[in-house]
Every structure is written in C-alpha cells, then in structure tokens.
Length: 200
Ligand code: AR6
Image 1: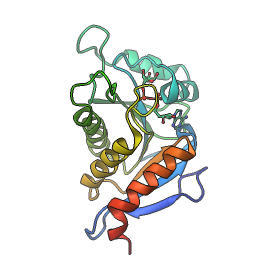
Image 2 (image 1 turned 90 degrees about the horizontal axis):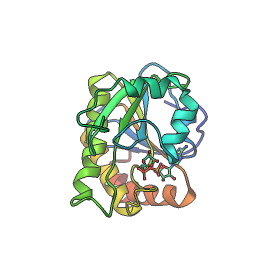
Image 3 (image 1 turned 120 degrees about the vertical axis):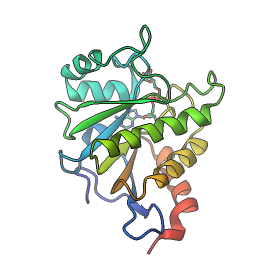
Image 4 (image 1 turned 135 degrees about the horizontal axis):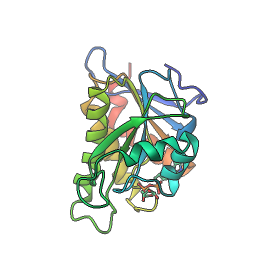
C-alpha cells in the first residue's frame, strides 16, 4: 500500500514465504508518513526517560503535539527516570500525527553499550512484537541510534533488515524512512544484498 506523502521509494519482499510482507524504503521525514491512520504506526528513537529530546524524537513530539508527552508521562517508570530501558519498546496514541500509534524504543549509545548489536536488535524486535500484538500492519522506522547515539549505519542497516525479516509473516509492510541521501543509499544497498533473492 502506498504511504501518503511518499511517492517512489523502493520495495522488497521480506522472505520467500507465500504472502510474505514487504520492506519499503523512503527518504524523508517520518512524521509525514502514514498508510491508513488505523493499522499503522511510526517508531520513535527515544531515550529512556521518554519525555522527548532532539533528532527524530523532537520532530515526533512537535508534530504530535503536547498530548504525546502527557501520554509518555503516564508510562510507568521501571526505575527512577527510566520508562523504557534500552532495547525495550512502549506504545502510545499518536495524537496529531497521521498514524494510529507511536511505538517508542530506545537504541544503544554505541560507545557506551557493551553489546550494542544486541541492544539494537532488541529495539527493532521489541518494536515489531509490540506492533504485532497491537494489530499494526504497517510500521515505519527511522535509523534508530544512527544520530546522536552514533551507531555505524552500515552495521545498523543489517540489523534493521534482518530483524524485519523475522516478522515477514506477521506484518504487511515494514518501512524505513531515512533522513539523508547517505542513509538511504546504505539501507538500499543492504536491502539489495539481503533481500534481492526474494524479488519476484
Ligand atoms: N524523520 C526521519 N528521520 C529523522 C528525522 C525525521 N524527522 N529527524 C532525524 N532523523 P536521532 P538516536 C534521523 O539522533 O541516534 C534524541 O535526542 C537522524 O538523521 O534522532 O537514536 C532522543 O531523545 C538519524 O539518522 O536518534 C535520544 O536522546 C536518525 O533519525 C537520542 O536522540 C536517528 O537519530 C536518540 O539518538
């Protein structure tokens, strides 16, 4: 299904299974992405406090309006100042955004995490599990941890694509909305390396 505001982009099949879902790549601003406002969600690259920040987190909060931070405050703390530990995910309504839900996850700070590849995989996997559990069929991710958390983007793209593949029979479309030409090219190259064997 076409994501509104996102013409073009590139589509791949996630696996060889009959009825397998698709992976779609776009360049742009994830706050503008939606499919139907009912079974779609965007993922926020948040921090453990879950009360907003810079980068994509700031953009999502600005676009959703102040109700989003109010909803985030209601998410119970698991320890002081931590609502969503690194690698986990939480879900809220999306308020003024065109999608139905926001899934907040926290990727690793690359230089501070002992096993950043495990934490990044957990962030993608727990977001997709939460999506599946909440009946989300279309989901869009930014490049989690590839901004101020400084994850090397090529390595991150491989984890992003391989984890999306695990959900090929659960979610209709996994989209990645990349903010720069460079990131788009990296995700595109990785998707070709990992998924071109499944193209019809
Ligand atoms: N749409 C899509 N991607 C975006 C957008 C947007 N509107 N804006 C930025 N990006 P970052 P992180 C890209 O730093 O590394 C926040 O302050 C950006 O170019 O947003 O996981 C949180 O509160 C980059 O490729 O997230 C945390 O404290 C990618 O989104 C911390 O940053 C992720 O960059 C999380 O750091």
